[in-house]
Every structure is written in structure tokens, then in C-alpha cells.
Image (cartoon, rainbow, N blue to C red; front, side):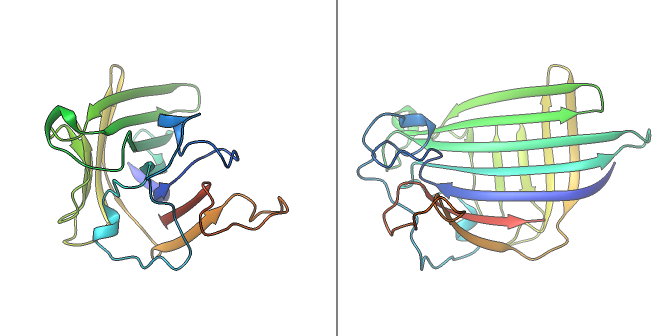
Length: 205
């Protein structure tokens, strides 16, 4: 297949909803988020380390979308996401780990849509994001960096009951670093250092 626009987004984020007193992310909706780190202005990124997990943040994900043209001339869309969500801001080995993983993959054609999901617990080697070299994986799904310390070129694989893809994709632009928070886009309030709806995002296109 020939890849056209490619977007890779890696984010460590606190929450997706504008409820300042509630928890960070989907794993703890309606509960206290005390103890978890919050994205702040002035954070100094350190790559390739920051391509990997940040277990003291409540939720983060590694996300890739692309539009493709197949050898058959048809248009395809693909999506690959690996979520990490924490019950507590710590890591442990084995089944006692409070870090949880969810993989979601999809493929679309002009007239059909295919999706699949995978679930895993951290600490048992079933899912993770090591960075030397970069490798995001859950079960036999993977998004692997093909250069020693970066994510400019990726080998991507996922499958479901009625679809599969195995692709090599390259970015055309440099890494873009963003600090985002609810209120930045005309909602009438500026983000503060400890706002629970801020996020750091790194993006390639």
C-alpha cells in the first residue's frame, strides 16, 4: 500500500472532560485524582525517554492514523491506538501492577469498517512501550521504530477476526510539541499550572 497523510500522536494527559474536581481519564471517572502528576508549562522533554510511558500520569496513549491506497487501487483508512491507564501512580511487577493497557485498531474502506481491541495488565510482558529502540506493543500488535532512537519510520501491525495490516510508514515533518488545556480555544478561562484537563502531546505528520 501507498501511505498518504500520516499522523502519530503520543500524549500523556490528565483528563478528557472539563470537570475540574473529578478524576484524570476514563479509568477513574468520578474519583479523586490526588497523587498523579499533572502536565505543566515548562516541562523539558527528553527523547527518546519521553516516547515511552509516564506511569505517574493517569492516562496516556500512542495513536496513529493513515490513509492508504492499496495495490487494488482502493482507498483505505487505518487506526492504531495503545492506551495506558493507571489505578495508582506507581509501577509493580507481575499481576499486582496498577498499570492497565488497552489496544484498539481499525481499518476502513469506502463502504465497510473493521475494528478490534486487546486488553492487558502491565508487569507481565503482555504490553508496554520500551524506548531503546521504540516499541509499542500489546500481544502480537506492534508499532516499532526502525531507527535507533526515534519514531520517524515505523513498522505497524494489527489484526482482528476479519482484517489485518502490516505496514511500514514514514513521517514527512519534524516532531511537534504541544501543551494543551481546556480553555485555550475561546472557552473564556486560561489554564493554570495544576489544571486537571491539561495535556502534553507530541505529534508527527
